[in-house]
Amino acid sequence: MIEKQAALLKRQDEIKAEVGHGRVSNVTTIDAGGNIVSMRREEDLAAEAGRHRTWTSEAPRPKPAPVKRHEGAMSLLGDLLPPQPEHETNPPPLPPEWPRQELHRQLSKESEDISEALKLIGPEIEKARGEFSKAAAQERLPEYSQLITDAIDALKAAGDAILRCHQFVDQARLDGLERRYLKPLMFTELGDISEPHSPLRSIIHRAIELKHVVGGVPTWKMPASPALIYSGV
Image 1 (cartoon, rainbow, N blue to C red):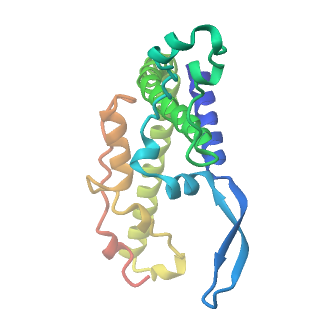
Image 2: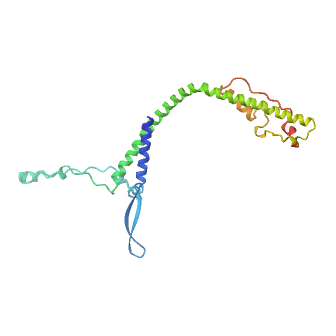
Image 3: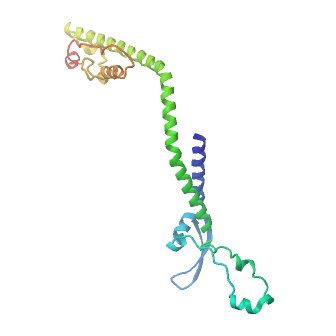
């Protein structure tokens, strides 16, 4: 179904390109001075169709009726007249109202057919894709969960390490050191790791909610507020 959809979409693009392709024609007009002026104009099929579109041009054109000879006259003349010619008994269809009208009708019908076909096949493809995705995800889920577990373990270890950094700087504060000489890294982008909605804790909490990992969210306890720990830095 995917291959068929791709082929239909390709043909749809080809039709759009063909309808939008310009054709150069010579147009004769009269300018404001009354002079006859000839100019070259490029017009695509869509614009040409719009210029000629009327309610009669869009309506189906009836096939001309066969020419029927007068029965009374035929009975009087008998075999004196030759048989009726083909163009009278089976007249050809009416010519198009503008040169590329039939081409436009064919492309319009084909484009409509393709659009309707895509509407029908689309839900079937989505259904098949959903079934495939579900089955494939079940096969890959254990591996992905292990990757998440490794990442969460790394985040927990990072949180522990960051807490130790905070504790070290805070101890320097308690010891009376000017902490600016330590050139401390404040980890402000990660917020206060002791807060429930800090980035690290939020990620770990979501991983537990999605059942990728088991266990609880670490309860990191800051030795003091970040503002106090890093005051004067």
